[in-house]
Image (cartoon, rainbow, N blue to C red; front, side):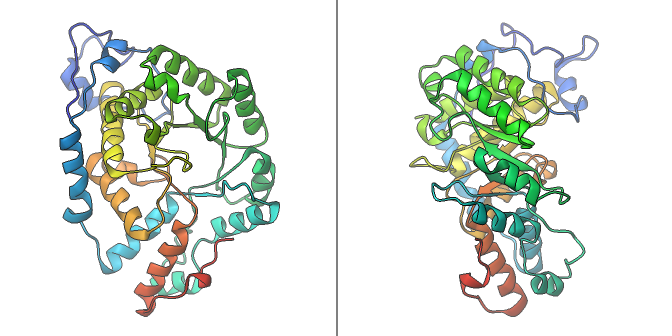
Length: 347
């Protein structure tokens, strides 16, 4: 991927480069551990971005083939994947009973006998978050009380994001008031498709203000954005507007999380971190059902962003059925046999 920049003419990002330090050196030495506050929109930066699709696809094709983890290392990586999982139920037939069972699974995502056999019973393995519709937020918050597992609510007219803006803002505030500590918001894809980056920036910035202390994950709906260049620009605009995470998809699009999109988005995260010192998280979601696929996303994060992005603070896997396959793989490592899926039921 090639990102074209106009350093001489673009407006510098506020606070990114202290006066006494050169730009190149500042990229290496200044970091900010706190959450991304957002910075002023730099349209020159956004519009100058270009993506070499062939190069991105070649890079993505190496991820499943160039790196593999086996035996006990694979088991360890799969346990790490569980801790980075947003365990999700976003179906039209969701019920309070299903949500309560999902929360129970979030507390104890792997059977105790498997953890004992792995020597991992003292690690306190639990998922990164539980993601539900707004109506189930109070129930999930109560069910997870004392566990340290945050509740994430999908908001802003999920999945289309076409409700009137005031309604979407009120929905965010209602979810935060109900106890959600993470809010997954949906952008208006039309802003990105039309190149109206000012409108997209203003929209996301208003979402961030409504979230308050709740962390904001911005869903780009990458399958609807037509080009990888639009994915790159929308990613950068979301981070400039204060996103804590950028997320690929709602899971409802025809095309959801793909590795080429992941390459583009992680490189935008790296670019933003180098420019400002603020670390933004990444969440692929939709179609991630197999343990093998989860390992590929972990490899991508390690190679493109480093070990810091292999923890729940900066990486999440949005999934509903993935946990079942991971647990089957762990049982195979312990016993040498694959079990039936019903031995690890989700709900």
